[in-house]
Length: 226
View 1 (cartoon, rainbow, N blue to C red):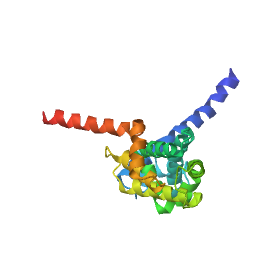
View 2 (view 1 turned 90 degrees about the vertical axis):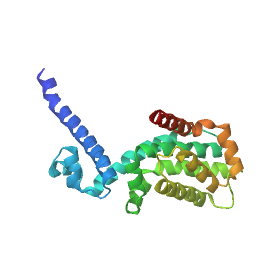
View 3 (view 1 turned 30 degrees about the vertical axis):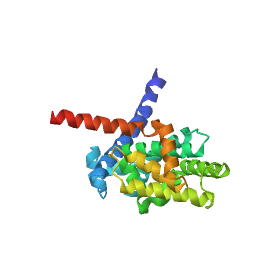
View 4 (view 1 turned 30 degrees about the horizontal axis):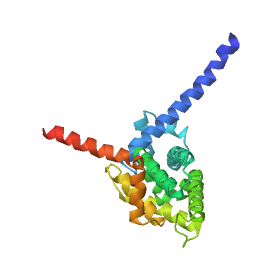
């Protein structure tokens, strides 16, 4: 009985520490969404903690931001690992669509990750995703599905930079955002617009969520006006 009771406090402390850390990350995400330059003090207040308590979990603001990037990267890497399509064009389209939708849910982490100041941390955190993209490009070129006038590593980097630009410049809440992201990436990969049309027509599930959102938005607008 004594041993069991004695073992409870450490476990509880670890659980509390994990919950506090998660709370800080959640508070940082919300705070930085409102103000990308929010200070550690602002984030600590949003988390209901003192500055000192926050520093008990993160050495500085940079460490906190890197933790946000790592948290978002885990979700992006998991998505990449789930793509199983043998056709590289479909795999690239599915990867782009899934990542885009996920980025819309973690917009702050995505925006921070795309910031030049955090390129190195982002590259490290997203290494599994980048390897998946590079593999899709190599397979696609070997199968004559993707353009072959550019070396695989360079094409993979071009696709990555194009996706980065689209995320930075496109309104993620737009009903057609995923469709645009997929079309842009496939275009850079070497597909003509008619090929892209045919691919999306054959696999409507890729952008079905966008279509549903658009329909729901239209219905809601009609209800409001009624």
